Image (cartoon, rainbow, N blue to C red; front, side):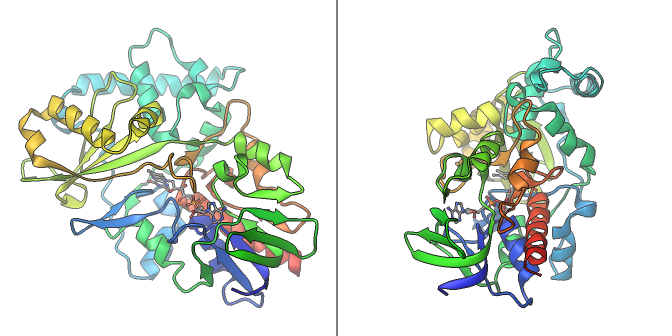
Length: 409
Ligand SMILES: Cc1cc2nc3c(=O)[nH]c(=O)nc-3n(C[C@H](O)[C@H](O)[C@H](O)COP(=O)(O)OP(=O)(O)OC[C@H]3O[C@@H](n4cnc5c(N)ncnc54)[C@H](O)[C@@H]3O)c2cc1C
């Protein structure tokens, strides 16, 4: 570990890696410090039962303008362009086509109210029609999309994302997490190096942790908002405006469970089942992604939180019960839990992706603003329009690296 670098990057997720890649080959020395034992952060592909499974991000959202697509294709990664199955219930099981149309119309009416009759509160729940019978379904959707209930969601923030999203969604059969981690392979990185304090009373700045200390002229902070809001990484003297901005951008919760599926043939590949369209905490089940022998179960918001609180195994059990309800009791014997995430319980993350609290959409710009032209911020939460995604994180990393270079020139 060098004692001094020109530029220190803290956090080895998509944003930190993108910043490091932008600096690589330039004339400034730099180092990336990552608290965990791997690169990628919330992008994490694990090989289970011979399948590369994405425990974090899986979809290349806004794929037609997503820099990870270009990067992956340039490196020879296969990009799968099969459209997602989210909008259709496989074989109408438990959710008839007529009900799906009705629910979609309720979504469109809700979206119109968000835009045209925007509640002064900026709280998405205030745009619900109290008499609509699809409100539970709308809550479930918010859980998946935002990781949070509509009651704690800023309308302005949600619409900023929605307006920018190109609605083109692709995947990487070998794993989004694998691509992001591989893209950081040749960079100067130290793993297992959590930064706990940044001393900004001195020039150069000084970052310390249980591993020691390093000084740097510029620092790029690319850690999740929970780490800043809870001051697990703190500044001396404190940067209260950053703690506040990070607290206004909490990480919602989304979790996955993977169930190995024995005798998968009757189930059509790349199809989806929603567990219960009238339950706001329902799971959503992606059957046989890439025609694999697996079901990817997805939980969001309140549903994800309650299952995570119940402990390891609760999500797989809940998923199994919902699938038995839809497909019959024979399915139970054919399912074997493979993996289950608990992103909220992991102290390096404390959640899955950020959303702005009502009235706090400006927190993204407040968080992203550099301090004293020497401390810079990156990470999905800093993106004005592509927050909560790996491509948004990438763009903030590149932007922070360019701002650092400009400050040094
Ligand atoms: C279940 C789930 C599904 C998702 N699905 C999608 C999807 O389909 N498409 C999509 O685009 N996005 C998705 N996302 C979101 C996406 O994964 C994230 O937005 C993105 O990866 C965040 O990148 P980042 O670099 O901002 O943060 P992170 O990936 O969180 O990286 C921050 C890094 O900082 C490290 N760190 C924390 N504290 C310290 C410290 N004190 N010192 C040093 N290092 C520290 C962490 O270990 C971590 O590696 C999903 C996320 C989850 C959890």
